[in-house]
Length: 120
Image (cartoon, rainbow, N blue to C red; front, side, top):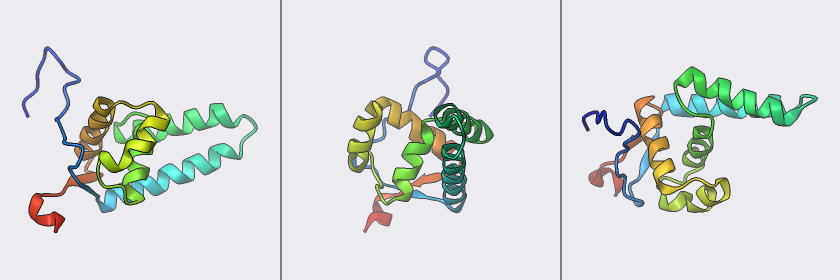
């Protein structure tokens, strides 16, 4: 997809049933995310520490802090947006937001879309 200067937040229109797989880099990033979350929850001010930990994790990968939630769901085996719907609803993420997250995770080489032949 080419860059659209009129709409820099344009996202790939991933279909809800499009499946993704987590790469080795993605699994390592998810482990770092979990470690950061656990460490933040042990602090004196867990909420502030949690927000800071998520942001630091995201900054290192050129992601957004909420992207870790979608990555966790993918690691847990929810390979498509349709399978993540409950999580998306709980986090207040729209389908458009989630598609943007998938784009960022793919750009960071943390996930890869599965081709139709790979889904069998």
